[in-house]
Image 1 (cartoon, each protein chain N blue to C red):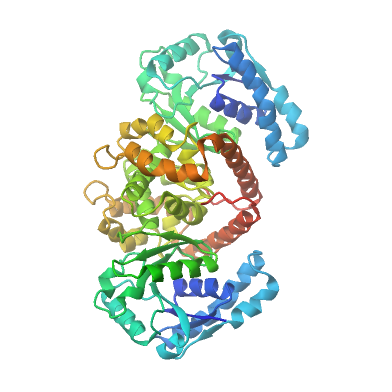
Image 2 (cartoon, chains in turn blue, brown):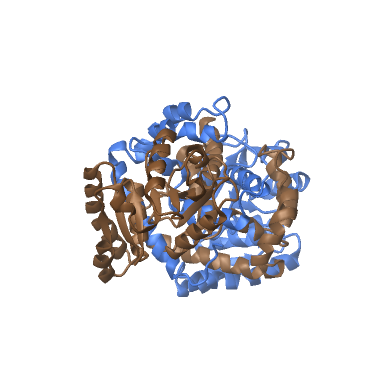
Length: 315
Length: 315
């Protein structure tokens, strides 16, 4: 049974611990405050029991999963024999530099050191660290044990081999990995969320719509499809001839109401050069009608599922 | 049993017909091409049967629902006795002007005339029409009978009374209404989608990430929460003290990676002046911890639901 070290035991560290222990890894939790680590260990019990209550793990697995989790008294003990290190320290470049330096000094060579940071590109804190080739961002969405997406963001110095191994390990933990080819601030998830929020603040701020009604545009509208199909696949299925056809039909409409500009981001060029090949590989144009039927069936199943939920969250 | 006229029998007209007939209205379908209307009537049968197959209506309701749907031979017949008109003509200002003029000349006074247009503000085609006070956009998301969100967009001349009646009627049809206080091109749904797509095209176009991996950021990430909770409620629950606390903690981070600008849209000001009051009414700050637990339970139920779906759409 391989071992993973989780450094920093706040909510994110606890979520990662649940992910790794569920996948069969032994997990050593460590926190600079030993009280925090002990509290975190205690918090794992209801967290794992909840997963069983909602049929995400078998009830008899609960004690096994909890049995794989321990608290380490110091960094050396936490890292001893670990095949991967997940760091969840404070969002501060100086602190990240210090923690990562310590981890690099102690962890066995070639063990990847992933950071949960949601805002700091790893190059900003690991440039001066001897083992910078094994440092990278491995960013979960909160709560990490419930949202499968994980962003893997290598620095310019990160070994390709390290990236591949972290990707494999995350897949083994049933995560869905988003692998970036280069660093960009905000990565993908928060950039997409930020772009949507900017427009949302603008619309509510101008008094055109209430926050309550705007929320319905997502949770009773776009969010239904997006819970099982990404935005690119969505538009690929929303025109008879696929994504380039969608851009030809609707690109001008979006520009017409002031979204983006042809100069900065040329949708048609990007569709032709990148999207058509990639999206048609999964869903060739000839199979779009069938994929639309399948999408609508999934929507019906989701609607039925939502109807069985007693309390409504959508405003 | 009240009657609704559906003018234009393409996929959108058919979806609306399913919505209205399910809610107990008699529906008269009309299309300038009588062949199109007859084909549409035939297409309603599998559409309604599908709803029964997925337990969205009772099986014995199917013949009743279908029994409420008929094809009208001409506009006069379609509009005779109708309490509401839903127009689904081509996306062309000239054609909308002509169709809406005809509808206004025939329909009984004070019957609202809603258009399904996704891109044309109603003021652009109804200014010169005598009954412009009863014209407005009533925009569904495709497919209309599966996605509950409907945007209601009055023109500067639309009677408030007409807006209220259309809103009531849509609620009666179990739609979730987004009521705009004034016209804006693209309304809400497509503006939010466009903002997210612009960022998505930029990221894929620059080679930072594949379309496949970008899609996972939504369908394995943000889209899970968004299928039952809008983006504003999402951020309200993502900071201990609610939405203004979220903006104080993370607003700078979004600006830091180049999303929007303080000058054009001031998130903090909008949060303080509008969002705090509105979002706290639904979820007071003291109830946020409980709401977070509820959100995580909903996420677990959704994950379980997704796990039971055989074929995976997320890339």
